[in-house]
Amino acid sequence: MSEVMPTPESEAELAFEGALRPKSLSEFVGQQKVRGQLQLLLHAATLQNRTPDHILLAGPPGLGKTTLAMIVAYESGRPLRMSSGPAIQHAGDLAAVLSSLVPGEVLFIDEIHRMARSAEEMLYLAMEDFRIDIMVGKGAGATSIPLDLAPFTLVGATTRSGLLPNPLRDRFGFTAHLEFYETGELERVLARAAEMLELEVDPGALTSIASRSRGTPRIANRLLRRVRDYALVHRTTAGQEAVDAALELYDVDELGLDRLDRAVLDAILTRFEGGPVGLNTLAVSVGEEADTIESVVEPFLVRIGLLSRTPRGRVATAAGWRHLGRRAAIPAALFDDQL
Ligand SMILES: Nc1ncnc2c1ncn2[C@@H]1O[C@H](COP(=O)(O)OP(=O)(O)OP(=O)(O)O)[C@@H](O)[C@H]1O
Ligand SMILES: [Mg+2]
Image (tube, rainbow, N blue to C red):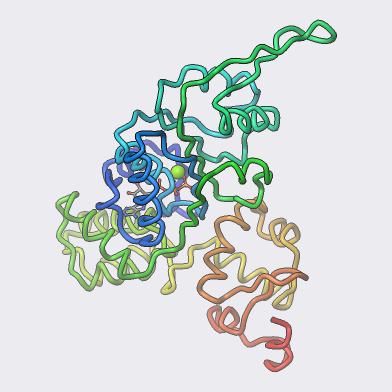
């Protein structure tokens, strides 16, 4: 990953994200459809004085899944418990969390597609009947003890909803599909962040950062920070010049592609003559996990029309060729047929 998308462990970045996280639905920018859907669901639950239905939040990294999970708890006035798929490697891990929930609590499981299979099965029953069966003993003497749970709302987040088994997906009352943000929406995210950080930034510079943020609020906020750094170090204002210089330094191009995005596109063009090429072959050729290519890089390249996913593999579009300043190796007419 490039420097603008550092690993989540970076403490300064985490604190920064936490400070800028919208707390309520009204502060949450964009995703109008999802916001309306969530509002209705939470309101109905309040009117009936019951726990809201289970909610699945699906979409690429940095679009606001964790933020929305926190907002669900805040808006419904319920406590929030946070966990994650990788932390639940045995059914027992999940049983410990579930059995300690207080009535009405919101349980957030991030990266829910990475939970252990045995825990998944326990979760089906818990979601449906607020009950689990705990296995005691081993072999022939093993017995299961039923345990009633306090009613809770599960909020699951995933960047790979396709990996969730159907029985699990079906038990969510509502799935929110988060979309990449429009430039205007990211401008609002940035204006809010600049105000909170007490940063003076030219409106034009905000637009410029917004249009180069891969449709992603997390990236927008991080680029803003890099521009602020630049302005600070070079004793200049956070204007267009600072934006251009900082983004060039961090390898963000005019469409917002970062180094990995370009490496993927470049590999398809130069090593596979524009495709089609399979995901795993592509991943090996750029030395990155297939998962990252599929859930982080491709959704954006597809969204801005540089890449197309076909049954035979990934294909660069004419715009993809143009973006890297190359001509398609095959006649355009034939190329268009392939898409
Ligand atoms: N709609 C929004 N309005 C304003 N800021 C937002 C919005 N969505 C996300 N952000 C900002 O982007 C940052 C990243 O969002 P969040 O952590 O919720 O993403 P995520 O979808 O959980 O990502 P990941 O898949 O990597 O966990 C937040 O700290 C927040 O400041
Ligand atoms: Mg998250």
